[in-house]
Image 1 (cartoon, rainbow, N blue to C red):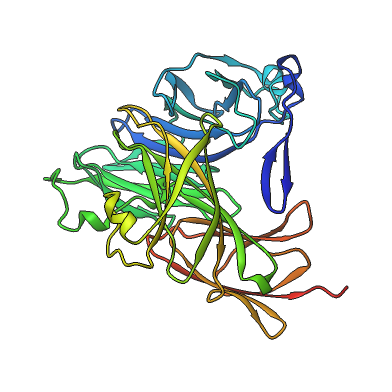
Image 2 (tube, rainbow, N blue to C red):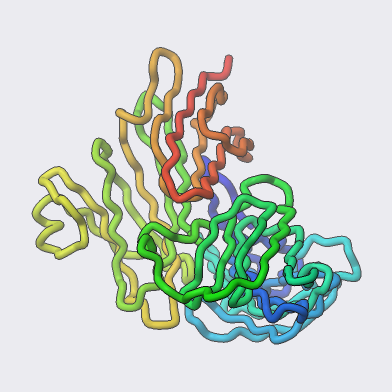
Length: 402
């Protein structure tokens, strides 16, 4: 179980393994990549990335979509790159493992995790590979291939067969060519509903596998898994707590450098390896100390401040999921104007959360957000930006009448 205190999530004590059926399966950061196989085969290869977040869980259950014939399944731990054992089970076993589903005919891939999900800010990151055959979702009409499928996962990519060009897409998407010349269609569904996706493609001549001259500006937004949560203290202080999550997969990397935004001051830094639950070492450096440490920080001045988090070096085929906590004071971007709370800060990450202080009601949000209430009665705003740019988030609030 998890408890929410001041907008942050903390794990409660884990029940013994014999009582795992009392847990409820939770997950996060799901992303699906569909690679369309030969036209006429009705087959597509699925790469499904998902994070199991139920503290103490030893299994993860992935539903097998009805109407599809699954084959060539495999599962790997994304932290270690090692394969995980799995089997196919029915609804009874899934419900015993924490899945809330009343459909007794549903089947699942049951994955045995390599360790129970850590109890303190921990998770288990999985990669599930499978091939589906589904003639209702992927078929041919004349010289046109059609992929049409309602997608409940919010982050997705569909890769066309080699030698095909996209001619229509029903959902606003990035179009990004793969290194081998195939065309990829990627999107982040920021609505609460399924994405009704229909793609059409036709044969194309001479589709070159060449690197674009503007490749450095092309990045798949939907596959990014950086996110940040701001928990605002009372606005008179100009202070807020935050944590941000990041996955490091570059071999040889052993540090993460967080550059403190100009005008802000940072305190109380700490970090955790979410894959293991281990606390990480850190240090705060300023000015010349940054240069002497040979950190990759540009335009260092005496006022430049960074927080350096250290973790075991990443080896090929593995990755590390980090969560870094800090407290910021930034009176230029957060405070009061008269009796009004004002938050005025740009966000570059695709997923951002702002939680208002206790006792404040939301009055304005210039950027669209999903609004909810935390268990302790605070207003939470979830911002998703599927585009590769910043959003200027301006929020105002007023005190609730006592």
